[in-house]
Amino acid sequence: MCGISGEVRFDGGVADMAAVSAMCDQLQRRGPDGSGGWQAGPVALGHRRLKIIDLTDAGAQPMVDAELGLTMVFNGIIYNYKELRAELQGAGYRFFSTSDTEVVLKAYHRWGAACVERFLGMFAFAVVERDSGRVVLARDRFGIKPLYLSRGPGRVRFASSLPALVRAGGVDTSIDPVALHHYMSFHAVVPAPRTILAGVGKLPPATVRTYEPDGRESDWEYWRPVHERRSEFAGLSAVEWQERVLESLRVAVRRRMVADVPVGVLLSGGIDSSLVVGLLAEEGQKGLATFSIGFEAVGERSGDEFVYSDVVAETFATDHHRLMVPSADVHAGLDGAVAAMSEPQVSHDAVAFYLLSQQVSQHVKVVQSGQGADEVMAGYDWYPPLDGVPAEQAVDAYARHFVDRSHAELATQLADRWMVTDDVSRALIAEHFARPGAETTLDKALRLDSTIMLVDDPVKRVDNMTMAWGLEARVPFLDHEFVELAAAVPPELKLAHGGKGVLKDAARKVIPADVIDRPKGYFPVPAITDLHGDYLETVRAALHAPEARERGLFRTDYVERLLADPNSHRTTLGANQLWQVGLLELWLQRHGIR
Image (cartoon, rainbow, N blue to C red; front, side, top):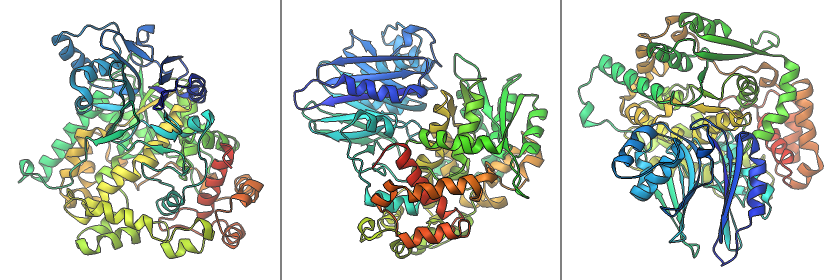
């Protein structure tokens, strides 16, 4: 688990190692255990290391294999690297380390870009072919590991974070109006390949990009989940589906214990993380380190769910850590959380994860997390209204229940110069829904949410906030084999019991019923769920700052209306509109973007 960076030149020039080093410096917190650089003619690579697999210097990067003529930087973990290593050794490959990085390098030599189809894991990497001059970038199926890109005259740069590219200079930092439309429509999500900045993009998930020495590039999307009923599962009973789902998740959880350091669990007290703990206990894990966070209550709004996490911790005799954060620390942590965001992220869960990760990193370097179950197993409350909606009404139904605001409403909020003519966000939904491979309206929504919203909201949030403290978070619910199975589950089984029905029924074999039958919870941060006091003043100052006035993203009357009544204006799903617009300015200003 690390941070990677690089520059590739196509104009005959020498790669700028100083720029790559600047990007690496920005990525220091992602990889506090070591750093390295490599440059050969038009290509330079940089790396920051977090030691998880092979703690020796043999696993250091950039990794060069002179015999094979390959050099690479790698961020992530390949859970089946030992099995692949044995296969490669059987084919005659010799290894000088015990790292999964070297397995990726030799797998690329053996199978070319198709090696990604053999990887069970989360990853972003760059491979340089010495003899051809070709450079290949790849990203895992769910984009759990980030990879940002910027084009410049005669070159391309890449890095594990957007601010790293900005730090290296030469980036167009103007706002992309289409991305701004998406940000305001999809809860701050800007789908790949765009970001909020016009001059920075990101490699889409499940994509391999090849750069030829002359600058030509080509993309290969190597995986897309199929949300249809499959013939091999025809006739399965509800109980049989429960058994298959539970066994697949058990395998996913087991895989994510692969490490040369201890692995803990972020235990929220909800069904998803509790099930991870229960399955690990069934696997024979003793004294598993678990971590729960809580915040001071504000009025009648509770700030913790310890009552549920305590039940799980006691049931499975974990080494449990209750982490209580004073309200004063939440405000102090806000700036750090915004600084850790590769892109602006509205959910106040980001601050919670940032503060949680700060404390957890003092105990372990790797944790498992329950992220992803809601998007894969239909756990959110906007899914039941989509059940049975005819195909011709699907886009309207999804937009009505999910999109933050209509195109017409947005036109009254964005300044004229930033408002695009067409409803690009609705067009994006329609384009995704029209793709083959999703059977019902619910299937279409789950596919869109799990490959777009999930990638650039919950998954990115967890990666950014944990890696800000050198903590690696693993997400078993995004094991691609588990997701492929979940995608085939009949909608009525997923929607049962208010959502995640098949998972809840399966979980009864493992964890206490009290945890399953409880109301759905979130990371509660009462101090910023509604904006008051210091939090309101922080947002007000950002929106009134000279940079914000000069940028002029929002209509003045809209901003003043929000500030006059900070907690009444909500999006379709109930998010605070003032926090949404204020967070964007906070992020832009925190990263020095004008």
